[in-house]
Length: 276
Ligand SMILES: [Zn+2]
Ligand SMILES: [Zn+2]
Image 1 (cartoon, helix red, strand yellow):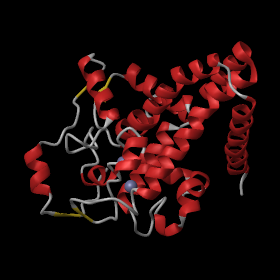
Image 2: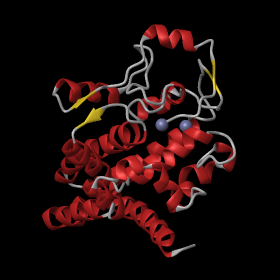
Image 3: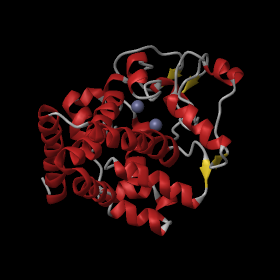
Image 4: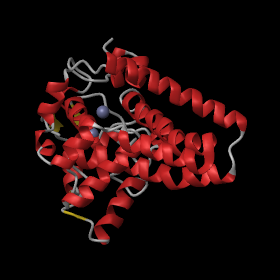
């Protein structure tokens, strides 16, 4: 294992250990307030920034707001561009040879293993994200994605000590890691399907509830660029509602939506187009 993967493994293990210790010691109310402030930003960073925007281009935005979105991802130790590159490969090869995290590769690989080694070289990932790497500020964040999270942890530590740092700065990233891994695994093995896609993707209501809409993963595999993963009124998709709020505030535009008639037509059409 090379040095960066070894450091990442230690970092992930350490984050889990520190969270367990802080929870056993009993966090203060102020620690939970820090969590309540930072966790939603981190969740937006993962679901809306990394996934729907950087990987799939589900909407357009300004260069400034784009950077803020990438920064939200970095708050939860997410590397928006690296994720986008890897995720585009997932969509192209889902559940087949070349997939970065197919359940057929095992639960452990889907949950943790692909974070350390997804089977592709860095150059191959970077080739997927050339569209974003041209922006200098995004390129900096791509090279130093851990810096914002570490700065927040340092600030939290100086403000409220160990517990504030762990509950405010690390619990959120740990939860988001497991939420994302739950989608990677369970939304390719259990749930319901409505389209004739080339993969084994599923809509899993429980995972969708726990991931603010990301669990409507089968819908998403059929319409990857759509800003909404939910395709029925009862397929609750909190991230999409936040996207609508950003749109109403004028922060984003060109939101990609699939009309109901097109969704219905798609139910009887076999689909294997390679796309993001
Ligand atoms: Zn998938
Ligand atoms: Zn996707």
